[in-house]
Image 1 (cartoon, rainbow, N blue to C red):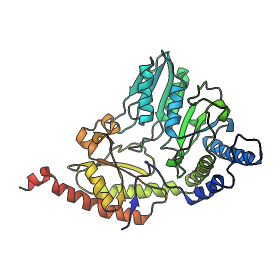
Image 2: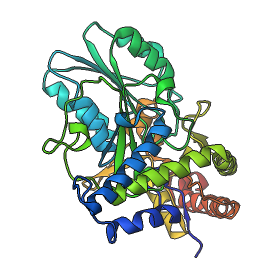
Image 3: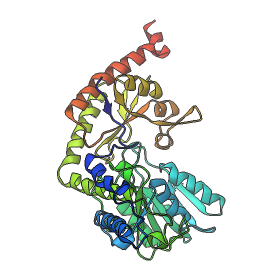
Image 4: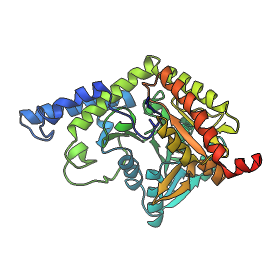
Length: 385
């Protein structure tokens, strides 16, 4: 059976070039990057080589790049590392749970937290951020691209608002990195989080941009690693893999790869929207090139995920499953969808290696699966009496 993976926003496979770059650092070049002997020097050179690549990607100084375990740690570091009781923290109601749960935790510790809601198309209005600012505002945090809808947020405008307010600005760029032109100077942020496994690199490694002078308290303490900002022996193979993945991502933004992916996404989207009773969540807003989120009337989203998987298409539902209980997506609910519409929504997120043949297969099986499930629906069956 032909299989098509349309869940790139969940994770991506290692590209062969990334695997080859990492290979020596598991066995031959196994040294600890903090050791001063020859093996340690080889490891340190590899880490600093990756740091140089990340600095070019972020458009920052090499000393402003900090390696860590990934997006969740980066988001947590930005929030716990800056906020104290009495501070004000502004974020949005459509953030990743790594930000939302951390916001709840600092609220319990005396931080005044405000969650700004999106407009119906999933975009945050920067003026809503501005209206939430108070003299005690210390941190504003916003994602670059929403993980469920792909909607690109107005980070540059919010960066200017943060600067006017004298507040620190953090961007969760886990979903946007490698998909849009990237420049932390243009964004105006003090902190920026990325994760390797969303960029065709390995799981368990990521990086942060930390603007020079930002008084970030370490989340992980111990040794003097990463200029005393994040203790722990460096994951040398992972860091090398992240560096190579970022290098390839920069090429993809220059060689037309993402434009090709956007055309495939648009083709799949148009084909699915030809099915009656469908619509795009985030329609009309700028979106990451690889992502579309589509709702299907009279279809239970989880059932459609399973039906498509059986037909060789891997997608993600618009809801998260906790302890066996399906809850509607907090993102889609914040955009104004009711519970039924939120549960009936699927995310299609394409790999940058996606092909026309992949799109052909998706457009062949999705209408079949939707028609089959609707035929089984009591609501539809009742209309056929």
